Length: 401
Image: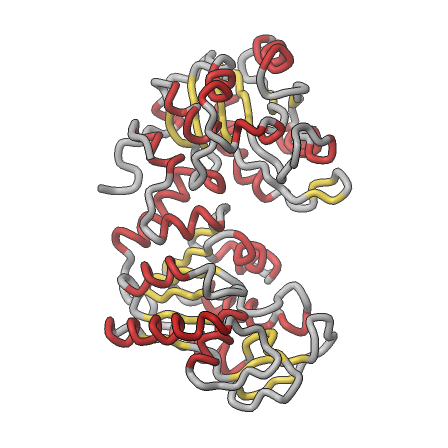
């Protein structure tokens, strides 16, 4: 079964002059009330504008941050509503709550084509508990349900799972459709050779996805701090580098599994080292000769070349996790180099959200534009690649997860 089978899109739904509950992912970074990256807002615009053009009364809902105990003015959706209004060139009404009289007053006053953004869903603890009564309260606001929040579909939360079940007319928005199509292709029929690139800090964060990928890929490229654990498992002394000592046996097992399945594993052959994370410069060394007191904070130029060579004949490349401490200039060349090599490979390229998406956008130039798909959800993209059934997607098919 294809990942989109049985799921209607917003185009298929009767939204004209209806109240449309549109679950979006506006969980954006804030700095003193200012949105510092509006990528997720911009990604949702095609679906929102489509709904407005068809005369729907658009009720947007999202979580923002992790409020501890109810409402927190610092995490109010008003901060996001102002940014959205600028993009839409239209007024965005933000009620004081997402349920109850405050929300109903704003929602029931909406005219066709108008937009409101409900207050932060997580101001109610019931949201994360998939609480039926909370879902029922949200359902009173709308006639049709559409989910366009890929970054939240792996969580069985009320607005993503329990609420969707209450609507006969339910489906996905354009962003969710695009995400499911691109990532689903990797699971159900990736063109070969298929190369997966994994980075980031910990092997333990990626065990399930490595296991799943070993059954699908022709080559596994490993970078970032997690590569140190694999290097240590292969007998390299990484000195002061971050190594998960309790995962060395696991790393050896994964390397052995790859060998048995005929999957080529590429690890760094050189790295950029420094004495601390705060260092302002680094030195390139062979991974076999890391100096005492130094830690590997990026892959080196020979490794970039090695990885790029493997990309050259790939038909599909999936990437999740940076190659080093890319936020700091001395240690960004590896991540940006991998992004550039992927973008110019000619392969179908998918970037798995989170830090990887941020890195591709930070790489500059036209690198981001050249990628086939950049996911908006890190955790969701990994779980989909693992082959898991995601609650927020399955419920749209009319099945429960």
